[in-house]
Length: 366
Image (cartoon, rainbow, N blue to C red; front, side, top):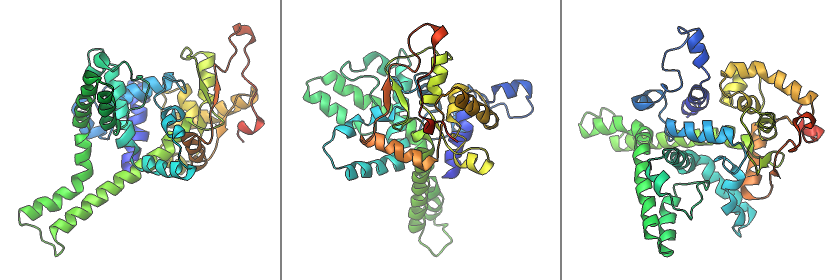
């Protein structure tokens, strides 16, 4: 469970951002050649380097491009508050809404992140079925969950849009073919006792069928716990009533863009190997969004400097416990809290007179 989460957050995440590319050029003997963007987990190497519910290429489009360069805009596929608008509108008691979030916490990679990243990948390919035949009545920014593959065909059929209704089963089959290897990996622990049992070579008193079921259960539990771990350290990074979302876009690496990295991100505790590994090195979100192609250790060195600069100039810098940030995210997900909505951090005036919006002293961090 932990290894699967760390393979994604520490290795796959930073390699896919190109975090080790400069190291590969300056010290080619320091790392194996596959730890480079464009090589790592591509093609057959997916099964060697990083086999997960998400296709590495889909992760690159959805996260590295869409999320990082449209942070907390409507184009950001990871905008939690927008993604759960349907839950907000449901006339349900809050306790039921919070209970529904438990399901997503334990299954989110398979039920949401995998189909949604796959959708973004297909939409980025001009010749793909999704790019050419995406139903016009379905906004492309709407999140796609595994349940939508069953719901949307019925919805379109009831509206008489037969062609659009047929689009979703085809997209589902394409996605399913992509996740079958991961399904096999989850079930892999049950293969050993099953093969020995069917071959009449099972040497233990415990029936091989029971051993296989226990092994399968162990594989499922490990994956479920990996979902929970990754949910806590990933999903809450950019959601909370003290973080901002925007109605406009901005130029990458502009002053506005750097400010949005701070005003729409939250760090967790930082500074030691135990803490950083537990958080998958995702506890430096502000620094990571400002400089996405750095190694994990560079973020640890950079973090005190960025924090001090933000505090000096009155720029919001939030650093809080991961579980507390998860609670703040859940409140936005169910509709009990709202993110701060604005057009932009900087006023659309001349660049000579641009100062960030005033920030509550409590948001500056310690």
